[in-house]
Length: 84
Image: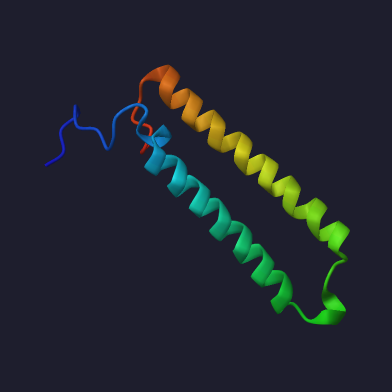
């Protein structure tokens, strides 16, 4: 049984070398999935590169903002960064 004092990981666990590597790897996988999706679209339905880049960068900026806000808030509130 998991008690109220049990934590998934300690503060700073996401910022060690393995945590940074894992976050980078997840970012590369997410971007690679978007590239794969683009190349799997039929050629006549594909958006131009500029439009595709603007759409994906808008999503990436939003995801990065939420990610860093989550990491910052977990450190600020001393909550479990792995489950917050």
